[in-house]
Image 1 (cartoon, rainbow, N blue to C red):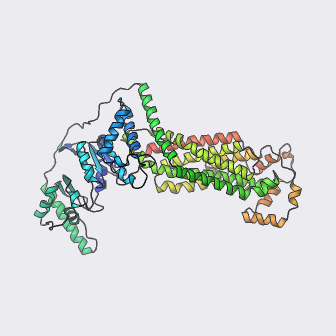
Image 2 (cartoon, one colour):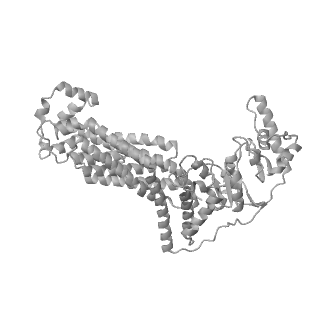
Image 3 (spheres, rainbow, N blue to C red):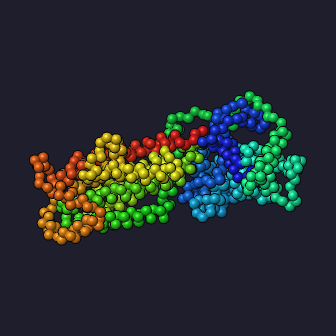
Length: 583
């Protein structure tokens, strides 16, 4: 126990080896026997012997309580190399559920209502650790009996608990804001210890509240702060003076884990496939059960397709046909399609991965699975849905806008772009955590949009320092593929005379309203008199040349998207391996 900021959670982080970002040194003592061994060398044993229940934990929200515990138990069984039947796993999980009082919510989704808070404080003992840490007193009364039955020593942080909760504990460690303990020993000895120092607990006062107030600092005034610091320092010095020094004994550090045994390559392969199958089933369940998000996502894609198609499509593309005057709108349709699919795919993947990463960072150090298996399972589960959403968007937009290219080839490019940008979201999520990743995503995407732009204004941004960034832009290759399919080898329809008779004022008003003042000059360049070098080229080839992409090719651009996808997955794998703590 102790006041806020005294280091309760940090102390449990050290005990459970969750010391990322902390500088830890000192001696480790087990059962009153000091171990002259570096703390960092002690971490592997800690990770095998200690389980930690976080105060704010995360779980896969679309799995039930039963499925969550069964998955962890199955992964541990596969990882152990022992022959464990599915019946034994189910029996162990059912026993754990009943011991922890979770039978009423066993078949409920973890993310529904308050079930997440109810489960995440109780579900960890299925790991059968020797020591269990918890930074919350939630439901401690009901779980203490279960912990004693399974022979698990429990360390729990408390902040102003009820007296009935306080009396359940065997030992007490009272921490102070000075970073040093004021008491450690049997709980019932705490009040007599402080009474002997002149601080007696008043009658009918909660002992826990009395002890916390005793070691808290008074921040209301300078005088009160100085007096409270002096009091706390005196309590710390009195406790340290009453303690006999611990004697460090050089003994070998022994692990209670089973001795490692040789496993044949075939058995290792079967275990690897089994782990991947469990991860794939979890990922698929998470995706397929989230029907509300899937429905909303399809609705957003369909709405954007209809919006872009109505803004740029019917007036010029469908009614006018394939003409020089329709080039600007065709380019706009393709550019908007690439930007929308790329942004939505990347944002969705990054947000989902940030929620899952807390679970992954907790499970991987335990050796349950590798980073590669997790990423492969996640890609197999989510990429088909991303491609389907992009295909729906592309099919609706192609029909609404009246594009000239084949619909299936147009949809294929958008599906590849969706997968590439989803993998980019995975890479960013693996390299950065939390708000940093969410802030880096729009900045990087805007840069990719700028350097991947098409048209006479953007054709000059291909050299110098921008060349690598432009090569890495998914929008560049997607736009090249779709523009090549739309214009390459095509001739304009003979409808210029009919369009020229339209009212010039109304045409200019539409151009100004849509923000494309350069359309007139752009069209003039495309429809200008052919030079000697233009002989043998089609109208569509000259459009691609004016757009700065004369060598655009559908197949090579799709191959570039696939290469970017593989590169993003590799970066995500490296980032996940480098950033996840290992034990």
